[in-house]
Length: 219
Image 1 (cartoon, rainbow, N blue to C red):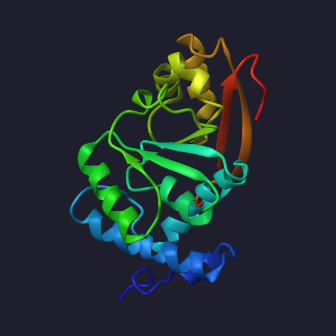
Image 2: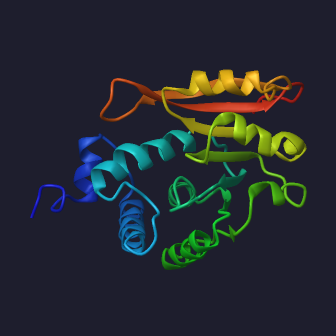
């Protein structure tokens, strides 16, 4: 048995100096086992050990959670295997959280995962733009769903229904911002770096970008 195979979630949390209530650790461990089991049948994640899960998935989600106020209505776009949406549902049960995944097979798996974790989290098997208008969200969260310009193109007609977009990005985010500006999607929007933190295993940082319409209050 390799070192990674004998690892535990608690050990990985300790390595990264992350303290969580025991019930959340248990819930997160159940999530890992469910998503890794499904991953043998359908491609959901490349992070299939506790070290990658904690250092990438959990760290990103914990940083996002700091930017969300109690009781906010939040939509996770392109949920895939449930990061950050399912993890936010475990860490922040006060949030009114919904998950959106346009790939039908992945949405069906998310339903099974959420049911297996007893989470009251609705799953929408559609593109996020199709929900806006029928629903309004205080925040939309997005991680690994595409370049910044593409997300801004999707949401361009819908900012009346979005309080702010929180997008997890890697060290190349300035180039993505430049491309979005070049394509004309930044003219009516504010953007600032809401969080910056080390990207595990590199000398670079991850960031969370906050984007909201000009003239609207910053939240």
